[in-house]
Length: 130
Image (cartoon, rainbow, N blue to C red; front, side):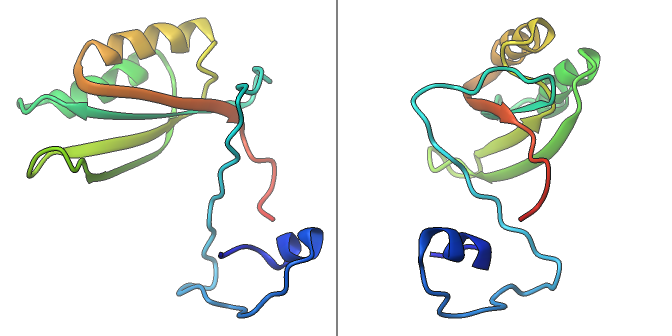
C-alpha cells in the first residue's frame, strides 16, 4: 500500500520505498469509509458522482446548479463509466455538507438532470496535509 511515513509510524508498518511520487509536491488522498456519516461542521465537503445525458450543454447544466446555489466545486474529474463506450462518470467535491439545506436542494436539482447520480458522502475538509 502507498501511504505516508507518518502513517507507517502510527500503525507500526515498515516503509519499504520512500519518494515514489513522480512530482515532488504530489499528494495522495485517502478515504475513511464509515457506517455513519460525519455530522456537519460548517467546513465540509460532499463527494458526488454522476453521468449526464448525451445532449449539448448537459454537463454545464449540472455544474450550473451548484454555481447558481453558490456552492464551490473544489474538485472535478472524469473516468470512463464502464457502462457504455464514450460515456463518462464525473466526480465532484462540493464545498458544503449534504445536509445543508442549500446543498440538499442543489443535489435534488442536479439529480433530476442526470442519468446516474450518487452522493458518496460528506465529511470535514482536511485541515492540513500529512
